[in-house]
Length: 100
Image (cartoon, rainbow, N blue to C red; front, side, top):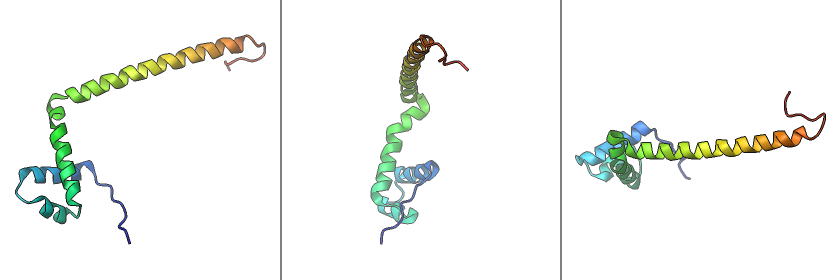
């Protein structure tokens, strides 16, 4: 019988990853202590090391945020054009109005 899938908090993952980075115990020992698979410990360690620079510099987060803002502004523009078009189309039919 399979164990149910567990969702670990970000704080838990960070603690385990930091423990692995310290190197005081083997990955297998850390995994056994926290009851997770050794591959999971290695994955969390890698993720922490890859994203550590963003914590101090914030460049990766800022660039991602700017891209997201650009995409959202683009979508707002599209939706505004659609609304204006539909509002104009409804205005051509007496009795039908988009305004309440």
